[in-house]
Image (cartoon, rainbow, N blue to C red; front, side, top):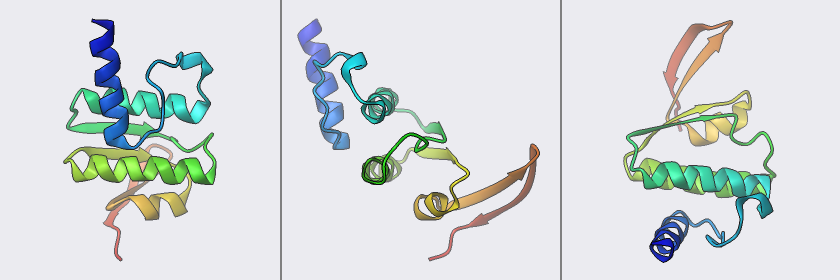
Length: 114
């Protein structure tokens, strides 16, 4: 059973392009790797939608690029992604549509052009 779980985890991590050893203890992984493991767990459940709240807050530029590759794959697989961030540059890079909230109220929703 454990071998099956490790093979399944390896397959999901590989499909997402996350270079993480599925045998490694979670506590031994970096924060960014731990985030990718959580995203991979969600992906393995075949969700229709995933919510990410400030997912790049502790990631380097390189790690953010890796995360965005994974998010694009998820999008291409038909998964809707709600991406919550204060980093407008990231939002404009990754989103198809943006909703601006202020003090809990929706200000505007628009598609990203370009």
